[in-house]
Structure formats: structure tokens, C-alpha cells
Length: 170
Image (cartoon, rainbow, N blue to C red; front, side, top):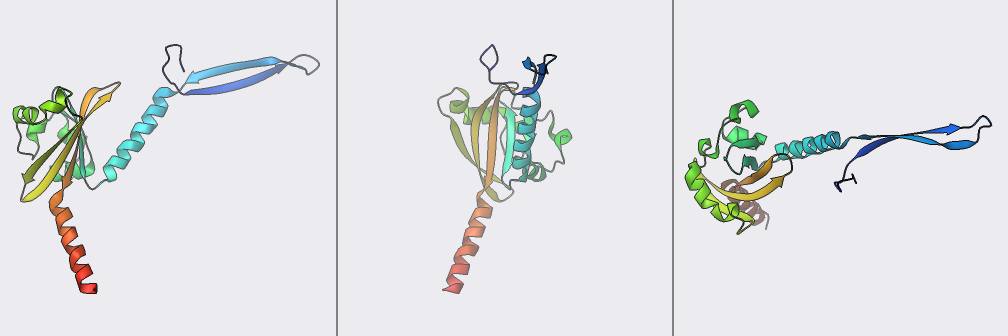
């Protein structure tokens, strides 16, 4: 822990030194704070994992509803290639059928802290989705909203195929 009580990562180099007879006289310790580097590695690992998900994952700024992150699935669904395509856009510019105002109204209990999770059903392009939205507090980016968009139409289609397979095999 640092002097402020915050948990930090350090890299330590210990160099012993001896007297003329080779006896141990002590050691010299050099510590380097590598917390930022470790946090960057962790963030990269997390975002790589999110990018691999089939469900759409988005992070929004809780105050402005600006998009901070979209995984590959969300980019593809919204016909965007990468960060340059969604940077500066808001939730109102996504294919969710919400303006910023109506989205704020729908998640008001989450924004005011009454609840920790809001689930919304949306229909987009003849598909049924569930949005699971949670507030996430970030040390360096403030409050964010994490949205996981689950394609229930695909789930129902897969469930019907599974049921048909079981019926055929029985």
C-alpha cells in the first residue's frame, strides 16, 4: 500500500553490498511504481475478452450518454468499424429506438441510485433484444453505464433448433 492507503504495484530491485571481508553490510532497495502499467495490462485483457463476446457490450458516459466503448459485436450491429466510427456519438445515434431524453427516463432509477440494474426490451430490425444496464464507477473515467445487449431472437431460434434435435433423436 502507498502512504495514502491505495493499493499499488511495485517492481523492486534489491542489491546487496558487502564489506571488504565479504560480510553482509546490508542492501540497497530501488522500488518503482508500476501500477499504471499493470492497470493498462488488466484493461487490455478485459477489453480483449469483451471483444470476443457474441453479445453486444457498450460503455457510455453516465452524464452525457456518449459512447466510450463498443465491442466488435456492437460495432458490427451498428455498422461501425472501430472507435473512430463511434467516438463522439451518443446512445441516441444507435439503433435502439431511444432519444437521449427517453433513454434517461427509462434508466432514471439507475441514474439516481434507486436500483443497480435496469433491463429494457427493444425491437430492432425484426429482432428482440434485452438491454441489461448497470452503472459502473471508474476511478479515472467517472461514472459509466455498461450495456449488455442480448439477442433473444437468436436465443429463441437456437432453443427451437435444440428442441427439434431432441425430438428427432427421441
